[in-house]
Image (tube, rainbow, N blue to C red; front, side):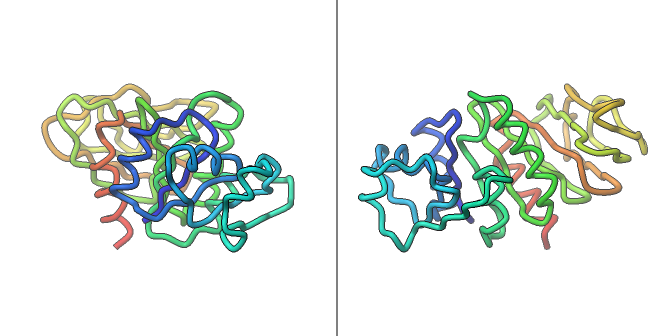
Length: 213
């Protein structure tokens, strides 16, 4: 697994936690400087590299720099589409700039074949690749946000969805709660984001790993 760092809200605690789970460190562009400040040396730096200052670049092995010069996509987009890993844990992509954060959610859906969990200080977010089982603590918040028109069924939530049509311009499924048992989420196609509290990270990793088998 890969830990991927971006330029949004980023704490040493979060980075340390993710690296214990996913020890291969990759960073997006200017996040290389933050990694070095934390005493970490990235295995790869991906992006257009326009935010990589000369001092930081001088401290990096040139072979680790992977420049993608086009300006039609974000550095997160560039990284996600080029990383080959069973799962990416991303930090530094939630918070600070809302436009950057929304672009990351867009990329999660467009690269549905690239499992990735974005980890913030309070919440995590990932794309549901298909039927998904999550072993969450009772009363855990479970929010389902559609980035496309998608029909969703659930089991194990206080307010169940039975082939309910969700859409970004219509009904959404936020602020639900887990009951005492596994939560099952079944979308009929791509486009559904799952948002959980940070405490649900282990359950999300296990659920995505099982769905990929």
